[in-house]
Amino acid sequence: MLRIGDALSRIDSLNPFVGRNGFATATFRVIYPYLLQYDETQSIVGDFAKTTEVSDDAKTLTFTTYDGGKWSDGEDLTAEDAAWTINTIVRLKDGAAAKFAPYVANIVRATAPTPTTLTVEYSTPTATAEDGLASLPILPEHIWAPMAEGKGEQLTTFVNDAPVGAGPFQVTKYTENQFVNFSAYDGYYGPAPKLKGFGFQFFTSNDAMLSALRSHELDVAYEVPPTAVSQLESDKSLTVNNVPGLDIDVLGFNSSASQDEHPELKNPKVRQAIDLAIDKESLIDVVADGSGTLTGTMVPPVLEKWNDPSVTATPSDLDAANKLLDSLGYTKGADGIRTADGHPMDYTLLFPSVATGAPTVVTEVVKQLAAIGIKVEARSSDFPSFLQAIYGPDNQYRGWDMMISDYAFGYDPSGYLFSWTCAQLGGNNLTGYCDKDYDDLFARQSTQIGDERVQTVREAQQRFAQQKPVIPLYVANAISVARSVGNVPEQTSSPLVVVNYMSKLWIEQATLG
Image (tube, rainbow, N blue to C red; front, side, top):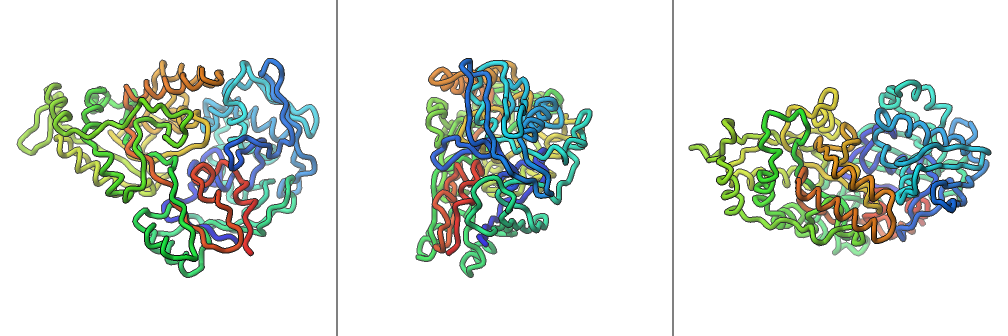
């Protein structure tokens, strides 16, 4: 069994409508069918779909799917399951299925005229159509349909602790926050995986994870701390992969309409002052031991085609930051804390304990903001509790001012853009930011191709950078270590495959001696 470890993450839920983090997504990738997926060259290829045809007007995609697949409870897997999944998400995209809403943009309907034929109709040619379908797990209609009735509230409350799947692997044992084991599934529609099984193990510290790696209790370790790289490289039995990543650490501001306790934080000039105060280069040095990249936009530089190089990270300048706040009339008191419109600039900052670089990055940011007269009280929690605190009752985003978190998506820029749209309030939107002009840019790029789309994607980055609902801090390198045994494929260390689990090929191709 291939043993994979991580000390910074957990599976936040086995329910696809709720689970958000990398290991939850990795689990969905291998236990559920997907129409399409990415390969190691960043190309979209078939998965459950054997062939794909695009109509002349580019508004209809027709797929021929595999025959003979079985759900793990013995029921037949057919194209109808895919049609039901897509139609259900389209119907509930503004509610229970909001997490998947960006992936069904412009879809009118999906139909399955035969058990092995799926047709997906769009209202307009959609550049993100195939990427969207490569991001949707196909769920068994006979299991999930009762929960999707009405407004589908049960879709988000179902625990799904014994998932019925039809992917190359099935869950054999799961202990929350500790481990999950998988075994090869003999009802899988595709080529049988070479591994008989694999597992994810979650450690309470990096030291414990690396100790397990050295003692041959692990084969692969993910999210390895940069400070451990030089020592690990000296071990000839290990292969260290340290490559530019996709995981962006950000400082976000509560931009919701209900945030009225500290309205000054919505002022772009205040956000600019905070941006000037933060020394991002020092964060990379102190937090990541130099293993990271600066960026001024939420699309990471490794996605060269889409990243706007003109949106650069703001250099640290404490004098400029202090002068900007002085010009707004926010003077420092005897305690060194500024006053804005009659109240102290004293703010609550939330962050999940599993965020990349936490809590060191938070400590550094708090210290740097104190240098310009801004006091920050940081509150840490596990990721589910962090989300509950961010959204609050009825998704009102109350009771906090700033947050620090990290995020990463896949190859297409739509993943990095959609999180901050109005449609994702209470979903993937961690700041409550809602701007019609930004939304219009996001909608426009989804229907464009070629250079025209690249330009719109860059305009969206520019709009976002002007308003600063979040400040990118740095992009962490993707660092993993593999024990030299069998054929653990090189792509297990690619940030575009592992960190975001955009493909299941990496696990299907692995062997162990």
